[in-house]
Amino acid sequence: MTSRGKTVIGILSVLVLLGGAFVGFRLLTREAGEPIIDIPLVSETARCPLTGLEADDDSLVDRRVLAVKIENSPEARPQMGLAEADVIYEQEAEGGISRFIALYHCRDADRVGPIRSSRPVDPDVLTQFGDPLFVHSGGVDAVIDAIEDAGIEQINCNFEEETCPRDESREAPHDVFTSTDTLRDFGGTNGEPPGEALSFDEEVPEDSRRGRQLNLNFSPAANVFWKYRNNQDLYLRFHDDTLHRLEDGTPVTAANVVVMLVDRETTRITDVAGNPASNFDVFGQGDLLVFRNGRVIEGEWSRDSEDEMIELLDRRGNQIPLAPGQTWVELFPTDAPAPPSF
Image (tube, rainbow, N blue to C red; front, side):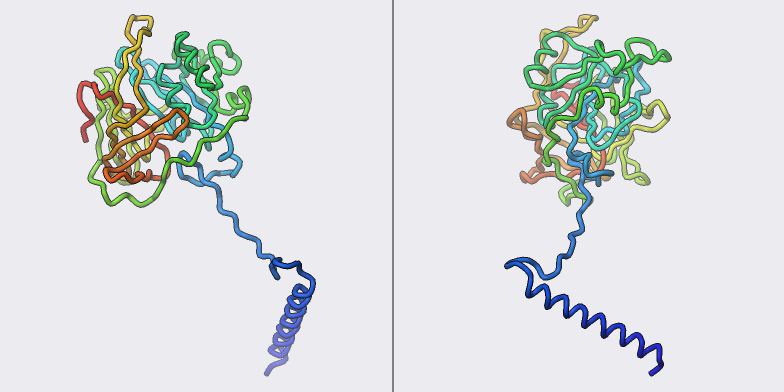
């Protein structure tokens, strides 16, 4: 044996002896039930409950949801901030146009807007997401009262121009833009985060079929298409044949498109043109379509109470897992001109 080999063996022998001595010392000095050697556990990165993706920082998971009402009339486009939202709800507003509720939890956007007024369905949607902070540009008294009655904290941009400045390059009233950081700084961070009700899995459920294109014809003013692209594994959003792009040119996409068939309720609320405002029943049960990875799963949505998260169930009553990533929830009326086609 070489001198180097003898040296290595000598060092190893000393380490073994030292290790044995340490174990013996721990056996003599440890408390009852205490482990002999403390092995630190490797902590798993927290996952965002509304996307199923790993959070950039564990603290983000404990934040309250920031909800922003964003306009979608043709005059409002292109918008900004939609790409960074965890979940986006779309519902029909007056005159056949649609409007969004963008929910920000784990991600932030440097520019969000244009921010517009609230609608009757907003409080019923928001109460399932913990203790959200809701940002809008006003609304009729009945809707503002309903938001207050639901215990939802709000920022009314009509009265907070420093927090919600107007963009001089845009025409009013489609000109209110801000950032999520500015809104959180003004509204505070206190509030319960959303629960863990949504289920995520990278594997597509077996009980699915081809679902590469979806048409939601809300009205002639809001004829929405979602088209799946293999190379991105995402759905691209179109208004008729026009790709929906944001202000920076980014196309609007979704990992999941969830279609909830909901009953329309006519209210006494009207807009400035005299068009009646609709509400939509998001409690109880209804037909459901979940589009993900170029496939569609049919089932039923279910929600029994205000603070309960929506359940997405397949025909056998099992939870439908979403693909990790952003989800668009389409509140599609059962009395629309045509049913969803795919």
